[in-house]
View 1 (cartoon, rainbow, N blue to C red):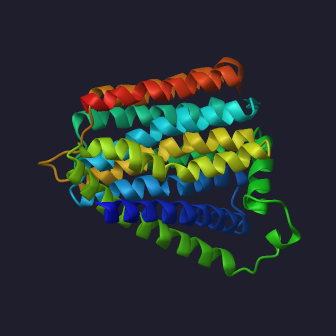
View 2 (tube, rainbow, N blue to C red):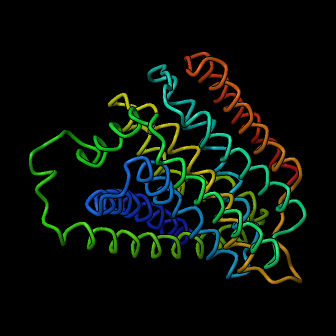
Length: 324
């Protein structure tokens, strides 16, 4: 089993590095194609940081490892808005000024609730099509909202993010040759796919060897690993005070996890064996999402105390694995 653990860790490492380059490459490429910075922030960066989650879940469902597939999405959704958002608030309390909390955040909350209901009933090709249609509708709304004139703060933060690439602004950052970013994006996507395959195959073997339910491995090891891109992006954005991007990235990631990831899992799962999760875990996912939304909406800011509350909420979800 030692070999499987090492290979799973290698898959996690590859996922993290490749996803970072996928996000940076696709963001800069979108900027050069003159796509709205708000679309880059909420759609491109959110989709890029979610790629590990829904690709890992889709591969797991295709292999018949539905416990890992659903557990990964549920665990990642909880991690994003408790552990990662809580750490960001503990490091530096922050305020959110943009319209993201009035539009994109409620949309993401609705996506998580919809996924929770369908995952309880069972993800099948039919429910997968429902989630795919919801994903298309969500993308339409995000693109429509991107034309609004009240997103100046998020626009500035996205432009800073794509210029710096997670580091310090340098003149070379904007002088990269035109062919560099497409290659970076393609190699990043290939790395995410390769890392996902390594992680899923070996995580499944580890679960069998330890005799634990696959959903436990998906909720813990796999979810933590696939959420690393969100953590890296959040730390980078928080360090530069890009708080709108922090919130947009985490809630946007959950939107894509729930709709795109849920759709892929449903479509990859046979109707005879639907992918499901325990009611307690799904209730915890919806509850922590509503908690994070309520804390943000209360004063459009997160304090250290509220960050500690989110971390405590994550700790309280772990005992639910005993019922998985």
